[in-house]
Length: 204
Image (cartoon, rainbow, N blue to C red; front, top):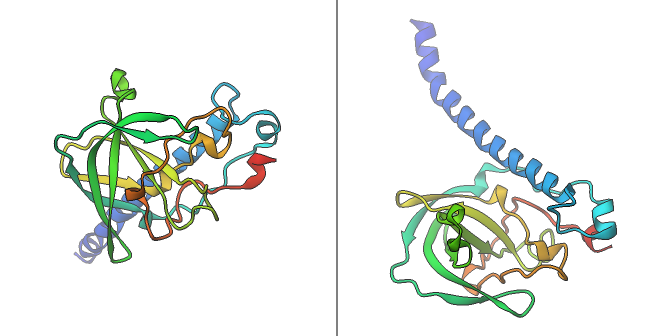
């Protein structure tokens, strides 16, 4: 009987532990795949010595605090608009919805977008794009902000895992790439110490 009670008491801890382990595994897989992409000459945005000298990305420590469940509100009758890019050109997007979440006791809202160009490809029909800026930009992360890739949720919540946020290709190669600029509405006044960090070695 005592053993049974002990198992019942431990069960929530075990469930939480397994859940946490799964989330950490997802973030570690993201890190491994991102490093592999940048080391692959066919996929990497790095050129010349930047590619030659690249070993791996620096990352913030994986932190479950930055994996949040957000309230998801779809945007009705969203019109297409031109989102400026780093090259001075623009790309067509539309706002698909908004994600509202709490972090350290405060509430924040970010807009999620659909690329009208990517929508033409079947494999991207449920893809959402989340560009954001935060208080680490220009210090530990790229000054222009970071991105996150998401899928359209079925219900009214969406998981935002900032541990899998990354920097645009323009952070590493501004000459060959044309990256969307983060809209002002997606600037967070707090530090998001998660995902890929930035080092000037890419510009040497």
